[in-house]
Length: 72
Image (cartoon, rainbow, N blue to C red):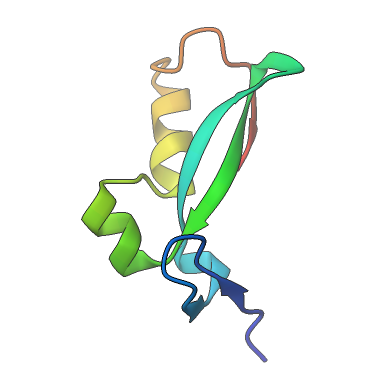
């Protein structure tokens, strides 16, 4: 059984493993990058949003500055 979630932009139901995210530093802990919105694949591609895997790859390459924790 698929666990479903709703796109924060178009309200379509989709599999969370296909999500794109809007991520920003957590206000209470700016060293933690957190997903604040989830997008389905079509919305994510249209808006140029990254996937969690893409954010993780950037983290591993040292491209996220002072971010120490990912919550995406």
